[in-house]
Image 1: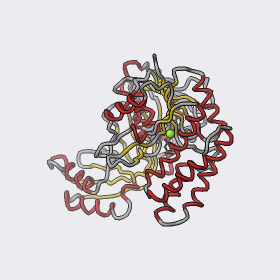
Image 2: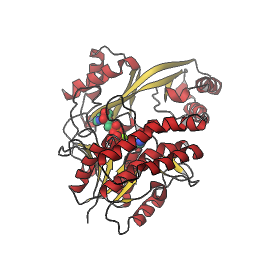
Image 3: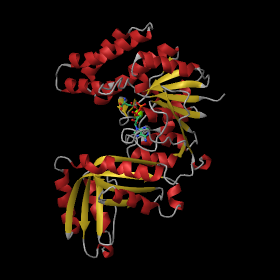
Image 4: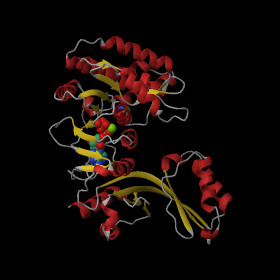
Length: 439
Ligand code: ADP
Ligand code: ASP
Ligand code: MG
């Protein structure tokens, strides 16, 4: 029988009334048997996600502060949620146990994961489905990466003879046997892992928008919905900030060709967006599929005459940053110039100073400069490589908006052009690109 795996995000779990929608969605289709849930998210703008409330509890725990008061906000969320659902579930005992463990374990990952744990326990009671703890079936390896094979096997084993099950998203079990989380937004990855383990016909990702939009709806009013998108385009856009779906969530499903469908919990009848392997993907006909971006990058600009003839120049520079444990986002380069584009956060403390000194020593540049407060914006689409004049249109639109481009990087994948502009121009630039290609 074909099986669908459904992941419900934070807003879909935000309160008891929304969780009633979740039940309706599950009940409407017998193939929806395996469910992954996030911690309750924001109920209204300005509200705080349960995961963030829990991180505050952790800070209290490690500083021997007031865990009880910090935890009372978490407690209030779950108590009212259970009340709204009108189910028999002894939430207070589970919360007491959780609070005690937060205090005794003093583990950030464990504490952060409890939102998903509690959400899944409650959802399994609502649906009458089996609760399966992600800690028992999702495993990380010694490098902290997902141990796919071990996880898929354990999940398949745990689901033998099970009609319907609920898993908490966002975490699994580290090599030390303790709870370990993915990065923020990681429940999307958990959903993809379960989809792969059961060889699902579809991975439905239920959120609060009716699909993947051509750009961030918080910047452009009601952007166009993307009907179908390839794994590759999605990866580029989500990595660059379109956080509808975690950028790493495509890996488990991609190799098994399992399509993902983005759906809206609040408007289940809306079609949403299909994310498909390139073979099954039908181009929309538009040159650009979507635009996404992120703020707060630093650019380290290096210039040296005859750089191109100095063998190993780039390698020496990259060695310096690697030694500091810093990952580099992009390396635009010319004949005598190269730049390192790095998330500013990674250069905090003394790191920037150390990197600059290291570069000076290693390659003795003529010029070494740092440009801060840079936003990167990616314009992505398979249509771009085959259509003449796309970059002219892109840069024309940016220039018309009176925006100065500070960095350019055309990804070698040819489906992506990245520009760096000042943080202050970020929104304006996205609007200009959107207008050029979509209006
Ligand atoms: P969930 O809690 O369901 O995982 P997220 O908050 O992680 O949901 O992702 C959905 C949000 O992503 C939307 O509410 C929207 O504000 C934001 N978003 C950013 N870029 C896009 C985009 N290109 N298309 C759709 N939503 C986007
Ligand atoms: N609750 C976690 C977060 O807020 C994970 C998730 O929602 O996917 O990041
Ligand atoms: Mg999310």
